[in-house]
Image 1 (cartoon, rainbow over the protein chains, first blue to last red):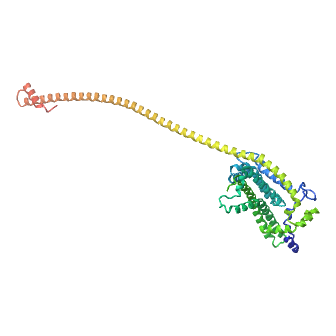
Image 2: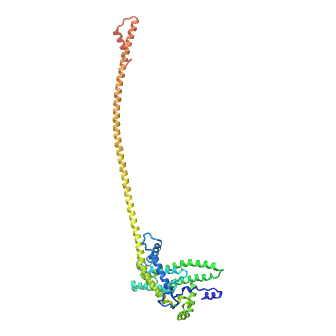
Length: 251
Length: 196
C-alpha cells in the first residue's frame, strides 16, 4: 500500500488495513467456511450485546423503566416509528426483521469501535449479504403482494408516455444498484473511518507529531461514534424505503 | 473517505492475483491487499453471519420485541387507566363540592330560620314586657294623678279655708259683722277660675 511504502522509508510502520484481516480464532491455519474466526467472535459479541440490552435490560418489565430498559424502549420506539412512518401500517409486519437488522448493525458498528475489536460491518461480504437479503426479501414481498402490478414501480405513469421507457430503464438500473450502494455505503464508511484512525495512530510513533496525532485520533473517534449510529440508521431507513416501494409500488 | 475507498479498491484490484496466490498457499496473514476483498474468507464470514442473524432474529423477534411491546402497551394502558381514574376523581370532587355547597346553603337557610324564630320569640317577649311595663306605667301614672289631684283638692280646700278665714277676719277687723254665707259666696265667685 502507498502508506506502507512511505512508512518503510521513514521507519514508520502503517498497517491500517490489518485490523480487517479475518483470522482463525484458534491456531493459525487456513480459514475454512466453518472455522471459528474473529468474525465469529464478534458476531456473537453482537448477539450478546443485543441480549444484554433488549432482553436482560428489560427483565424487570417495569412500568417505570430502568436506564437500560429506557434505552431498549428507545431503540424499539425509533425503529417501530420508522417502519410505521415510512413503510406504513402494513409494513409493521416486518418490524422484527428490520429491528434485527438495526440492532445488528448498530452493535457491530459500536463494538467495532472498541480498541482491538474487529468490525464485521466493515466487510463487503457481511454488508453485501445483508443488503442482498433485504433486496431479495423486498423484491419477493413486492411480487407476492402486488403480482405483476409491482412492475409499476418502474413505469412512471406521471411522466409523459414518450419518456416512460427511458425512465423505466433508469428505474430498473437504479433498482438493481440498490443492494450495491446499500452495502458499500455501510462497509465503506466503516473501512474508511477505522483506517483513518489507524493511520493517525501510526503517526503517534513520531514524538513531534504525537500530540496532534492523538488529538486527531480522539476527534476521529468521536466522529466515528456519530458515523456508527448514523450508518446503522441510514441502512435501516433505506430498508424501510425499499419495503415501502415493495408494499406500495405505484408512484 | 470516498477517495480513500477508491484508492483502496484500486490497490486491492492490483493485488487480486497476489491474494489468489497467497490464498493458495494458505498465507492469509501476509496478504497485502484489502482484507475485504479476500474471497477466501467470504464463505467463513457468510456462514457465521447467517448463523448469527438467525440466532439474533430469534432473540429479537421471539423474546425481546414481544416483551418490550408488552411493557409499552402495559404502560400505555396504565396511563390511560390512571387518566380515566383521575377524570373520575375529578368528577367526584366536583360532586363533593356541589354537595358541600348545598350543605352550606342548607345550613345557612337553617341558621336564618333559627335566627328568625328566635327574633320572633324575643320580639314576643319584648312586646309582652313592653305591654306589661306600659300597663304598670299607666297604672302608676293614674295613681300619681289621683294623688296629685287629691293633693290639689286638699290644697284648694285649704286655700278656700284660709281665704275664707282671712276674709272673715278682715271683715271683722274693719268692724263689720261677719255674714258667713255672703263671705262664702263672694269667695266662690272670686275663686272661680283662680284655682283649678
